[in-house]
Image (tube, rainbow, N blue to C red):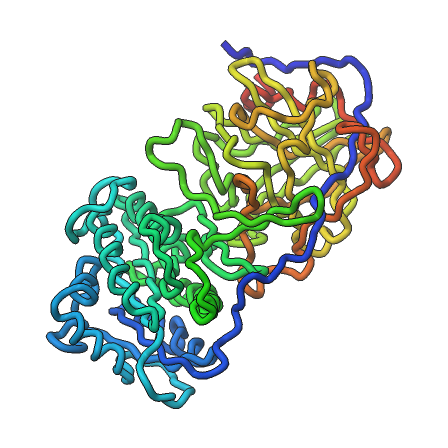
Length: 561
């Protein structure tokens, strides 16, 4: 039984810790997001959501594609032989591409050059057939029955298995037509969460597994996760710093409603901003004959020697994954606390004038909110803001933590704490940094590997690196002081993520939201071993022994119980 008491182990001593941040290195541009050099004919198969997306003043997709050298045509209700344009649900794609009527439909589609939605075409028809074939089902197709991990079935229907069957069938047609680029646009999400897990799982399968499972070797198939982009401000499928990045937020339902399940103007325009550069990447890959790159999400990890590695973005844990396993986003501070936790709570040295407040505010790296840490730490005292889980978390599939910070002012002493172990046998690990100068002007990326955290001095094995990411009980952001010097200021934290595998997933602000200085903090000189690192101001941070972990297993009710 965990007792509600404060653990005070005042052995006396000063832990000297230093600033350590991940060095930045240029990202090699492996993909090209430049528009085609010559006009390219494109046709989009859609219904009402696609029409809104194309329309000037709504999603502006048609106009934006034209500005990127695509001559855009589209289909809609009533289009084509046998009125095939009426039928764009997932099971209908078999009729479009794999039925006995498919040659007739495709001949009409490849040669269509009219508009069926209201968008401005700035280019003249370059002649010839449509080269890029985009197609999308509407939001009712996100109500897939079945279970998230169901395998492909043997016929088309409105289930996870049936939908996988459909897209596997389509690859047979796509493989026979390498002269066309086929772009799958995932169906937008519903507001109703009843089938949201199935929709998420199916679209993740399309993005990350579909081509791999079928050993598809062509370069003429691509997927844009329209679904994911519309689930929240921090959910993305876009081209960032030379890489295609797929970031999952904290929601599986429509975040941009318009009064019903048609995406709003804001959501449609967000999708345009993210999709068009990606389409350029897909087109250039196809023209270069590059092998398929699935999953499309690439993340860049900075190695200790300055080199970089790339790996697929993480996928959500499957249903049969062990309880407590966590991946990807820890907290985007947009609303509800992380699953399995009651939220971030402040703790401080109540025997001093120290104060500590942690709250969600309307200032963010991405989205609309971040966590604001307001602290006034008396000399030789401490304060911390902690997130504790009710169940041990397994973070072993990740390689560390990443987050963005802003500071007022720069040069504030800040520590990041990890708490791990089984039951009451908790261990405390710490990493201390001083907020870099650029953090006073904008968001700065911090990336920490597990080995950057070291056991606190007052516990057995002091200085040893953190090796228990499979037994995480909580974490905290905290504040200490230099000797006899108070520490006062405000720090904002946003986009707290697990860095997965041998890669780093970093949510990136949409165009216009990301400051030019949002880059990893520069590395500091390393001092005397893993715990004794030199702080840049020439002083030592004072950490009262034992007080960093005082809240473990305790709940705050006014004062400590």
